[in-house]
Amino acid sequence: MSKFIRTLKSHPAVIPVVFFTGLGASMAAFQILRACNVYSDVSFRRGSNPHPWLNVKPNENLKYYKAVDYGKLSQGDRPKY
Image (tube, rainbow, N blue to C red; front, side):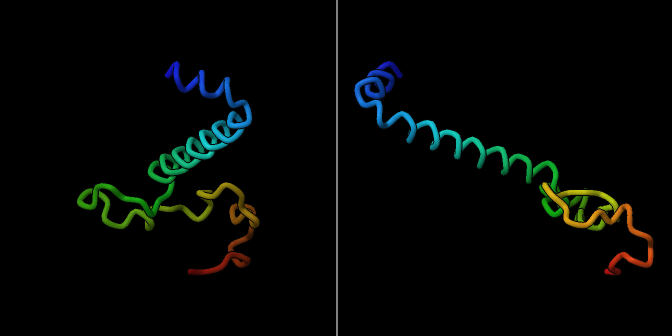
């Protein structure tokens, strides 16, 4: 680790590359962990919950940003699937 830090000190132009590469890798790891825990279409135990997407409620939000708030629409305005 000390050799890595000495290399960064001797080549300061590499510091932003290392920083943004680490930031991108940590964001990718966070998204993978979030997908494993939040999304209903991910199931690691097929025996206990074979169809997890059937347990999603109509007003449950599983997205970062939703364009239409289906919880505030009347029953007639909602799309029927």
